[in-house]
Image (tube, rainbow, N blue to C red):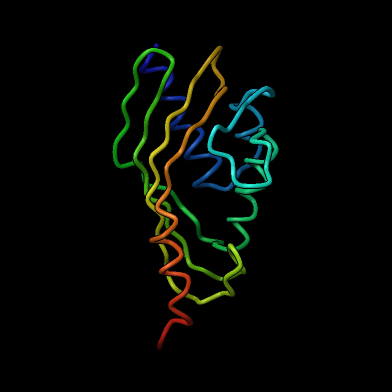
Length: 139
């Protein structure tokens, strides 16, 4: 079961996050999905997650994801990932800088019946905000 769940997460990351195809999320995330790490003001629903990723794609049009490590056990899959993109649109209140930025992410998901049902995440938002606040790229 763990290998199947890891494969599902790879498909989700490649299709939804790397290739910017929201229909992959529609298929692989359950309708009763709960993001236990939802941003302030969000309910943590499937639609909230899709909306935030679309927002990221607008701010970082070349946004991509690199999975550094993945561990699966039972119905849980943990990943350590690096998100990368060029800051070309407003993001988290920061105007575009043209800088290449990275965000380190650790997350844990629960898979049930071939779909992601729960998500927990730890993101290096301080590191990302430092990159965004440096101002326009030089040269």
